[in-house]
Image 1 (cartoon, rainbow, N blue to C red):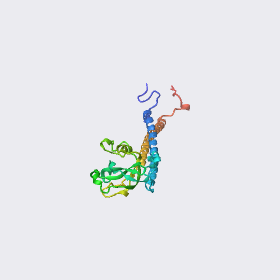
Image 2 (image 1 turned 180 degrees about the vertical axis):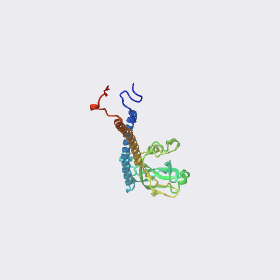
Image 3 (image 1 turned 90 degrees about the vertical axis):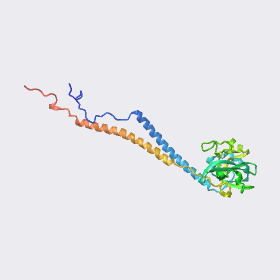
Image 4 (image 1 turned 60 degrees about the vertical axis):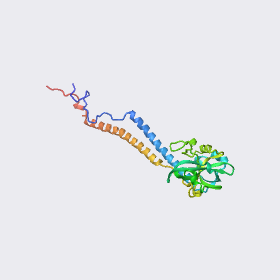
Length: 282
């Protein structure tokens, strides 16, 4: 019979002999995958930030460059947002004021409308021009007849690409003459325009007049929060790495300390002349 508290081998358990606390594979594998994913997201945001800064530099150069003539009609189908949007251009023609379109707008002056008016070019083609912003009380065109541009005019502004599929979580309703975005093709069809350019022009303030739309309100601003996002992903990744280090490093240290205490508390086996049982003398 072994004494209470003593194992069959005669060893006495020590305080260091504690059950393993190492995380299971069901926690470790997802944690490692999470670290990889978070680091990848952080790197992606760093790359996105570099792309966004390059885009801002390109657009800034375009809007401050000297205005160029309206692109030739043969090149219209090749115009893209990446290569051409926010280029300063000029166009000469006469406005088709009776075919204007009002699209919902929100500016620093409050809510109202953009006045989108077709500009008929000398060759018979048309390009839509966002002449500027008006308040709701100016919606009726008769309130803006005085000072309305007539005859040949030259428009200077920024080339903008079409805005399809509506806006403000609402879709354009041409049959009801309700417009929430500057969808060039849809507006051209609704107003019976042929040979219309696939882009429009945001007019600057050069044509501004009392009682007329206020041009030059284009907001050129690109949100650039990629650095914040990158730091967030990297911090989360380092937190997971820290958890793994504590979990596995702590287990290793606990095992090392337990082994040392176990070795120090166990008596050494007798050797030499004192080995074996002591004979009983009579």
